[in-house]
Length: 329
Image (cartoon, rainbow, N blue to C red):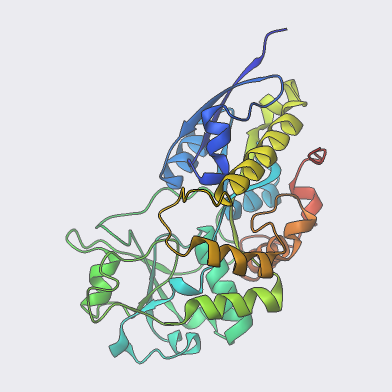
């Protein structure tokens, strides 16, 4: 019996490497894995042109489309990208910002107002630090170069938010921060002048401790992206979802096993094994679980933040976001 040819666009993350190289093969699928480094490129090509059968996709955009009732994709609980985000509060030290609360009344840059990282960070600001988000003047643009970051796809906000576009043809958000034209940056990218310009610094210098404490307190390891399948493909071949889910789980498990191999160091991280010990203590052996229950705190936080920030009219059950795929053997 011939296999179904499936094109899957995703970053070539370590957890996806065995799937990309063919060390793990999805049952019944002839997989064409497209390794595309820039997530925004994947999102724009998938959402605007449906170029792939399956892909990595922004979690905030997916939930917004699901809530609007017109999502052309179905989701499986595979999360290629997760990222702790307290290290992504970047400020100009001359702005007077000492805590997130001090960002009220300030000009704060971000790549996209709608991007998952920005939604998550604003959620931390509002719920953990009492920030009134309506008192912030938002400036949107690319962090590392002049111009825009990409093309957002979610439906319009239910309550409009005024966002200024960086139209400076010569300056990125990082440049504007260094020159004092904005006061802070949040989002998915770090300015290239972080660590080299005295006016571009982290709000939380001890961000690893802050992120660790936040995880212990909340159980939130912020999810940035999930894996989606085009609805037309799923309706024609519903078995594909379970096959791809199982293959992604197997790929991640093999990658983790390879990372733990102590006979040689495969990653350019000199303190990898002490870090793995700390990760095991914190995550109980699997720092990157897939599935709904294992990620419920992070998923519920995202739905809550999207509702608070007027992306969606009401909070929807997490189970409504994902297909009922069978667990990995």
